[in-house]
Image 1 (cartoon, helix red, strand yellow):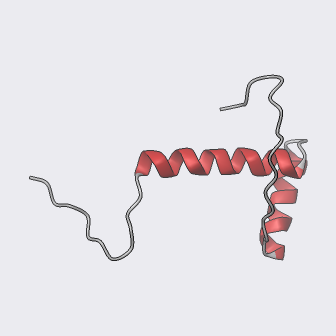
Image 2 (cartoon, one colour):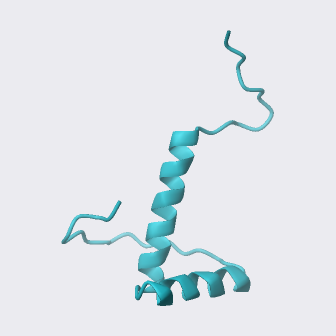
Image 3 (tube, one colour):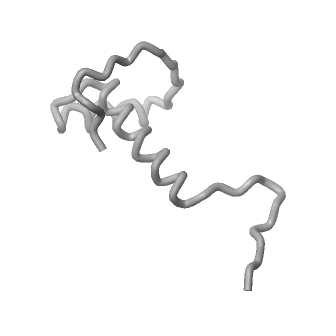
Length: 67
């Protein structure tokens, strides 16, 4: 799950977070002795992996019913 040693993060993304979510992210980062950015990357990576394994559905479409 962890990135390779020496990975350079050169692309930036800005996210707007609710104060409560930012506080929780900060608390998680402190608990694991990581920066907020590192913790955000970990959570985002885990979420993307879970989403891709779960699959996504588009709005308005019913899932296909296979027999």
